[in-house]
Image: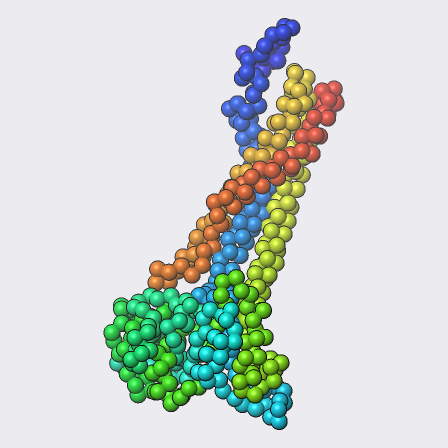
Length: 438
């Protein structure tokens, strides 16, 4: 039965049509017709779809790239507790009790106990020592390093990422052991062949230290011991003796107890340290308290703005592609005026015409959009491979599964919207006008 015969079937009163007729617009023939229409002018369909392809690609690639960039920046502060603060001494900026401003001073080990007593809301209070840098030797190889002394509880402030071995422990502190934990760059320079260096000895400032661990924490945003990745951590008690530091402390790292906001404690921390060393409690430069909570909040606000910009650019590009689809579909409807008029003359309803035009728009945008998603995922996968070292992935650049599904749904919705205006134009075509156009 041809189409003319099918449309001339007499429908008797109260006759129930087959269910297949109700969903005729979803059958295989309809989709073949859609594909035939889109492939009739391949160049135009390709160029039109490219706008949608590029819009989806930009949206997905920017979202994945933004996620990866955020992780890379967070690596700069990897391991640092978000409710932590650092306290150190600087030349005073205010005169106080007969002392002129610009006075140099040094914290001591008693300040650790003072903070424990005066600010009970603090959880960890741990001292740190630093040297002016040095050179580490292993055999005929050498590396510039920054030496620091720490207590075992410093790992609760800045969590190490142990690639080999362990961190400084209580036995190292108690027995004043000559052991050290080296960081990634130092490990690469002293042991270019790789392998576990634990148990081997390196020489720093004419003292030999046994390596007990390799720390791959590459945090660059908060670094106290020279160039990133070149740090060597010693037991604080041994560093006090080896470098003749006595009870001096270069820095005190603190964290607040669970639920405490560090910004509410910084003034009390500064006041406790300042009064013990005859410094103006309001001298924020003299008794420096660096609150990492502010830094993390700044990062969060930064990436909220980045995410907004990503969606703005991606959706704007996608909208431009959809407008292009709508314009091309409008041209297609104009070219098919006679065809649509004949369809109306042989019984096609406005709903049939509407479904046909919108189906063509959806298929075009969906195929182009899915191609954009796949291409973006491929590019993001290559970025992940480029940021993988020693089997460790630095950042995840991929988008989530549901994000990709959301993008596909968004593309389909854009297809419907893009097809509405051309479909309305097609529905308004009358058979008589179509014949005149012919």
